[in-house]
Image (spheres, rainbow, N blue to C red):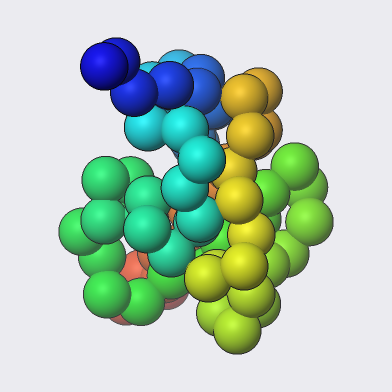
Length: 70
């Protein structure tokens, strides 16, 4: 059986991901950074909501990783 997939845009690049998954489940496929902030469809997502937010086809995800220096 083929698993449903969704198409999202992550930091401006198209990505195909397994469907019916939460942000928490899909984050490892999107970044290997340990410290980051996430916005989905231009709305900040608090870490406490990662496990409840299901990503959908067409979602726009921005991962912001802090950089040292200035």
